[in-house]
Image: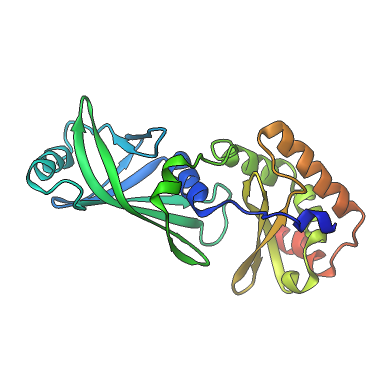
Length: 245
């Protein structure tokens, strides 16, 4: 068991930010002309630049073009916001928010956003993302598959989720009424423990990183095997009864 914690079982800030950006399906843009929210209009270049393919009726395109011409290059003139939403229904589904300040440059068929500052806010607080690290970082290899993986785990294998709670410290399960899978990345699985009042998150690190879904299946199998040899926490005995009620 000691080997499970011999390495950093969490993604670096830059990789976490790139993962949020890669998986986000919507974004909000605040610029001189106001604030607009878009769905499915952005793509991400390999270096982390956000490319916006705006609809014809958007006022942002004209505003961004004028700002790019008039404002000194590199001076922040817009802010992009991306929300990381838990795919499984839980309390407080926003797991993180990524803000990117910078400026637009019109390119053929789209607007390219050049970032001058990025901030990632998670439950533990806000952290400024190092832009040099952000450029070279890659999204977590499970980022695009995470939503499907977690919803399948929650919907098709609730017994496995309950078994995994045997790896959680009993104190963390005190008063628990429901446990759901909140997040998964190459380093581990995070469970959301909901109580009558409030909630908490517990991370179960893998014994080694998973670089694809096949490796994730093996890592989950190891966790479940470890859980099978652990005693069932009494705090979760009533989870199923109260949930059915």
